[in-house]
Image: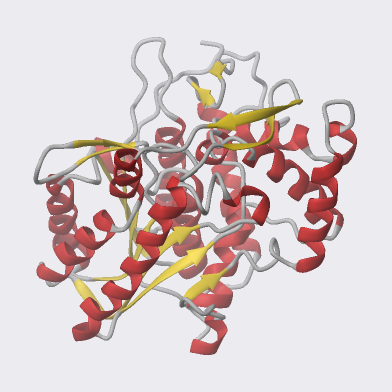
Length: 399
């Protein structure tokens, strides 16, 4: 069939297998063009099919030569319905990994569940014995608690009072004003339950109890801080409360891992176009301005460049001082974004931006392009008028 993007707002309901495969191959090519990473041997990536999780798996495999197990929840193609982008990404990743002799196994299911945790542990025992890096990069709007069965749903809202600021429809490039009402206490609690550190802690406890964590194991989860412009809706809002909880969990996990001399970190990453960031009011406008400034200054990075730098220049340099931890023991891989000269320029443009000038002073078209590339579209190398088979198999899931 011929596959075209079908979208509503920040949700794209189709994905292109050839475009997704091209995206993965480009990320692999970038990693292989850089120096080898003296990194981990056996890696578990929780949330491994898109974004930072996928990039982490690619760097671990093609940069460090590691064996990887990836956990995610994706859907394969059915009838005329395409598979999800994460399914196509993983199919392309596993094929490329196996062609070069790398071990790569995937587990598809609810990563919040005890069942998937146990299935993963059994696979580690069977194939690897132990894990020396655990990447936690899970992004989901909902979570069913594995013990109580309670369904939690996260929200993107300010806390305490309504918030009003500029935002943009990245499809039409129309700049408008948005007002978001404050979250209730229950909404705050639910967002923390979905996006905080509880599930990360449950994963690490399960792995530790099973005896599959290597001596000196490292675990890292991903977070974001961002500029003052977005704080009310992000860092000081419901998501920020969840990220505070995630970051507090890192300290608890470091104590938990003392018996194997392990260490838990949170890496604060750069703002990038993801399905999550596309959904947050105000943030797409900020990212569009940020990209313009960072590209002009030669500082722009995509997902794969960020993760390569995290592995090669922070986690696996052999020197603790290279981690560049802040006063809350977080790795700051957002350091280029938060440079004073970058933020000053973005703030100046923020005050100026409106519908009439947005294409002149921002990179809104690149934001929109990056959004569709998440789903395999808008790569000039792909002929989107050609018929394509929507079926793709993930080798390890087909075995």
